[in-house]
Image (tube, rainbow, N blue to C red):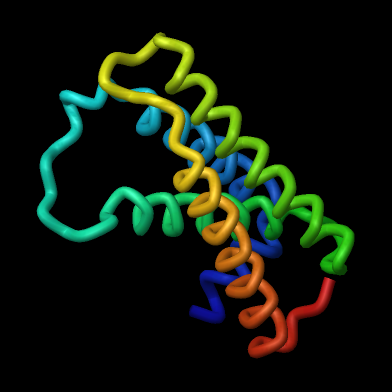
Amino acid sequence: MRKLFRFFTRSPRQTLLLACTWTLLILIACLIPGKEMPDVDIPLVDKWVHFLIFGGFSFLWLCMVQKSDIKSYSLIFLISVLFGYGVELLQDSGITRGRSFDAYDVIADGIGGVIGILLFNFLQKAYGLRK
């Protein structure tokens, strides 16, 4: 895990490519028509997916930040929530069938953003890597 975290925080070009790819995949996945999504019988599975994908989103983008501080964490959190909100607005715009705006998804995106920030902060402290 240490090597992987070190790679993300020390390889800006690759991490930027991964963060951009992750962001694009979120956008694509969230705009797939609802009827094409598989039915899964797990309570609140949609919210868990939002936690995970936006946790990864905030984690990867934090790896790109030059300085890890409350300002950076706040900015990444805000971007995470605004991106999630924007995706929900796109879903509600009618460009995808079977999708609509869900405020709880935006909340799940924000919680996922916080989880990614906390994971980043934990790994940074655990491995003694300071920016």
